[in-house]
Image (cartoon, rainbow, N blue to C red; front, side):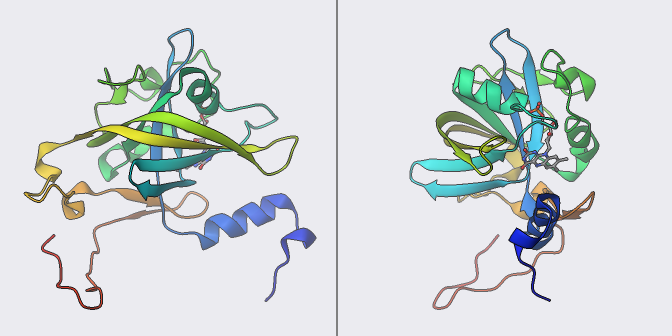
Length: 208
Ligand SMILES: Cc1cc2nc3c(=O)[nH]c(=O)nc-3n(C[C@H](O)[C@H](O)[C@H](O)COP(=O)(O)O)c2cc1C
């Protein structure tokens, strides 16, 4: 079967994209509005870009109807955000925060989450998440349809908070203990418990 995105409805192209790029990590992004209202929402159009300086990207599509999602508004106005890693134990809370609440709603309260002050940014961290990455927004690139573009937020990691038991003596993250989840298509997710290793050519298998 050959599918030409020019010949199909854009919603269908989106479905093809999210069914083909799997599994996707989930950035649970906390931000703060200009009036001080905290916000948190999940984004799976999310990737690391480069390690030096550590930089990541999150794509924030248009709000249903039109306009920007609160995360994008807050990231642009404050220049800061926190990426919280989503693990199995907090998947339901993550899902609650994906509802399109109006800007004045505090999603931490709606989902029963505990905001913890960050060190380098004003946006709070999610206490229930085992890894929080405090970030500074470097750039927002608008991509796609002109009337309702997505905002690709490019942000630099300034500070990591990692639950003690997840750190190996080599300062790597023990993903076997993390239990991160990934998004598939529709309402499907995957766990990260079925791990296996492939040694890189000319390298030794790693110890974690
Ligand atoms: C697992 C998951 C991943 C999501 N990924 C994205 C994404 O990459 N981009 C996006 O614009 N919306 C994504 N959404 C939808 C947003 O979370 C949703 O629109 C949310 O209400 C935005 O909140 P905000 O207005 O507070 O920023 C995702 C939802 C879920 C449940």
